[in-house]
Image (cartoon, helix red, strand yellow):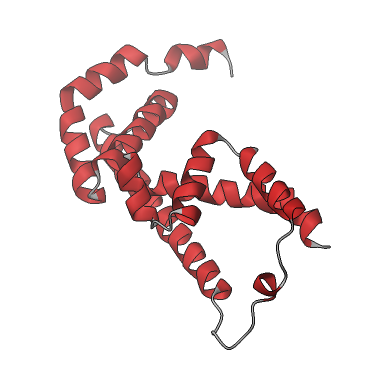
Length: 178
């Protein structure tokens, strides 16, 4: 990036003025679209970052551009949440088995070694991931309830669980082959 491009960029002060001018309207709009105040604030941050990064390239009315970017980001968040929910539902469906099919994992007694390995893998997760895993698996709470209790957006809770499951899969893959 050349120094002439840096000079053309919108300054943080200009973005702050833009936000002061219609930030409340933008936040209300996003809250109405997403029906979730926390998610609206997350999207608002993305929109402000994009305005700083790309606002200097706008050839149309900047306010109209910001509103369009806000709607695009809100819809992207919704699509990602829908996709995550579908993946989780599909995984849950695949894991459910009819009661007349014996579950081999239950028929083989867990050894002390197995418990240690699983506990170690869980302890290697970040504290945020451990918290979501504990609430979901050990306390059998839904993701919606977890999000509400932790005062986090549902997408954040789902992302933490997905990241935790990916880490656990990697940590336990060699053990599972035995």
